[in-house]
Length: 213
Image (cartoon, rainbow, N blue to C red):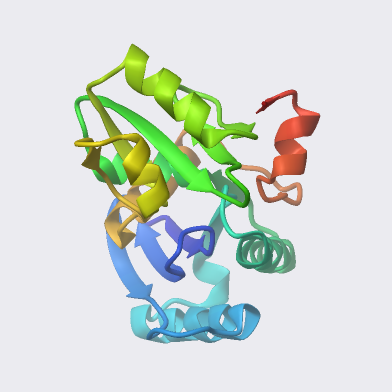
């Protein structure tokens, strides 16, 4: 058995799940409204351990969604995952919000992922690497002209939907099954680290040269 604790705070809906390969052992989501992220995560992990009969020492890895997402919530989840993994001496499995919603969407067409921020800016992915763009509308029109048969995934607001009339809308968040499966596949492939992780932000993309006007 490979027990992986999965933490999702980058998506609009927070979730904690325990998985074994592609099998969901436990999932927990807060019931509506605002939550105190660190308190909720600690309580959810305790509930997960009790519900599965696992002990902390049975956890083989901690998987966490690095975003892009809401900065405060995403950073809180990543910080919690870093601290827990360090305390247990186990590896971290970095996950990507856009990868997760693409996997959840299950589309044969190209999946274009979007996460608006403020003032017309946002994260955008058409292909492998996410971009931080200053003008989502212009990039969206260019994408639509190149590939009319696409599926939108991520946080698709009414303003974004208006840029892609008639386009199919995919997932806004991964299910527990998809989260657990992606975490298990990444862990099995050796995509893990003992180094602290950082959330994906506009600053980190700009530092990597992935910011466009």
